[in-house]
Length: 165
Picture 1 (cartoon, one colour):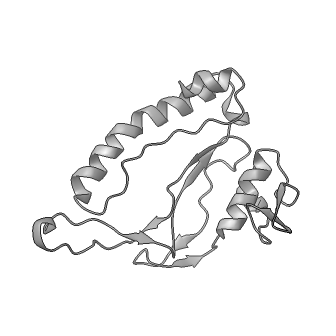
Picture 2 (spheres, one colour):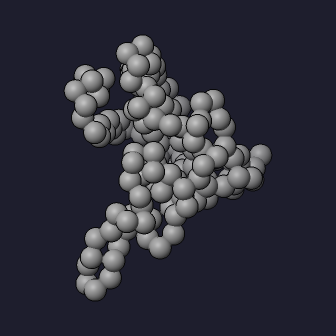
Picture 3 (cartoon, one colour):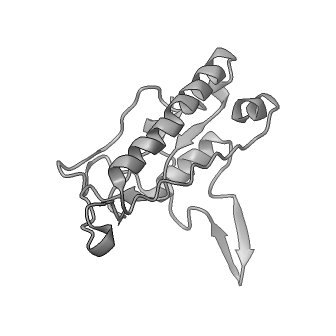
């Protein structure tokens, strides 16, 4: 479906896999979710590349935030079904096509996966860069509300050229 939408020149396609909130039963749920998405995502990338559409199609695979690197300790009926909690200090995502530098790995966490160790990218910078890759100037895409101009990157955001081809 997504490939066909891209072929029909739809400007934005959002695919959601909604069962990634692994607060419990991490091991079986994570394995199940990976199995559900690995082949379809690989097929989408392969199809887009084969048809010459990957260079002009930006793919962003991300969650809404990071996950703690350690398991949540569960008690009571949830004991033994550990999961992972929300984590604001570090998160991972990947991007492909659409002007992104191919094969580039940017940044890293500490040995525990808890904090960014080097080359952090602030969420406003990531948003500004994605918008730039989509052809938008994040500083000009504003809306006026209650006497103030607002934008997705607030008063921040710098396009990060090191992430682009």
